[in-house]
Length: 313
Ligand code: ADP
Ligand code: MG
Image (cartoon, rainbow, N blue to C red):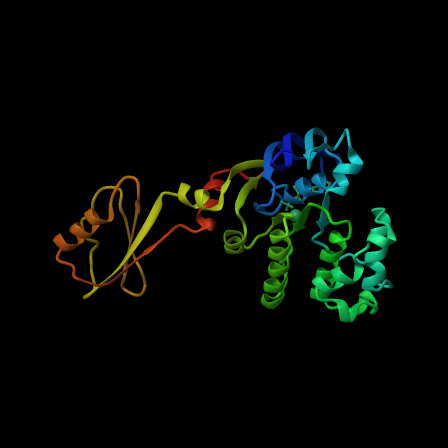
């Protein structure tokens, strides 16, 4: 058995022209391998093609060309098995207002052909914290409860892969924490998780691996830590004893920025210069230091570095 949960080769999607716009090439040849058991993050600015990509994985959008293999099943060869292996939590909170959470899950189980004897309706309601709302109409649920119900809905057929499209967009901090808790628990039981998010710090905290997608192309794909390490820049922030002006002479390649609080932010390339050389230059300039700290690049910086300098489509 392969160690890959999802493999994508040469995937392209062009949406047909509409009355408002011409044809739109949303995916321009995606190659991706998502390992089993990971929490895999798909990051990218609005319109990058994230939803298109995961909707194709889930069988909700028809691709133009390319190969998509879900849990070993080629979508075109074994559409039923490939669909059964994946569950998707969409971004929109679209639920039938007149169904209760229990009915919603039962209906979904029916759609996926889960036999009555194998249904885990109560266990799922419990897992997403909706046991006490089992018989309330969906329209009476709060936004957070609806989102949890959608998560439950995606779990009814016990898919090996769960995909969440911006699960925490517009969700308050408490619910976000609770959702991440559920997701981590699911992952601990062996479910492969794929998610898209705009909260880069959250992706940094949650995901083992990240693919950055921009304008329909994968611009980076690596472990979260490698991705951060690819950005070589490091910043040394020193607080001088007395105000410094003008900027001291520093080794070539060091960028000096005076911050509003009187500290100096010295940004340099870790592979080119070592911190000792910078500190020596500071000492030679007669500056005494009262405080010193370093700043590492954030995923956000990696993201900006990879997606900037590209003209908008
Ligand atoms: P993301 O989820 O990263 O914001 P999407 O996959 O939703 O990106 O969209 C990618 C591009 O495809 C965007 O330019 C969007 O306007 C376009 N697009 C998405 N859905 C459709 C559609 N049904 N018809 C035409 N264009 C679409
Ligand atoms: Mg989207």
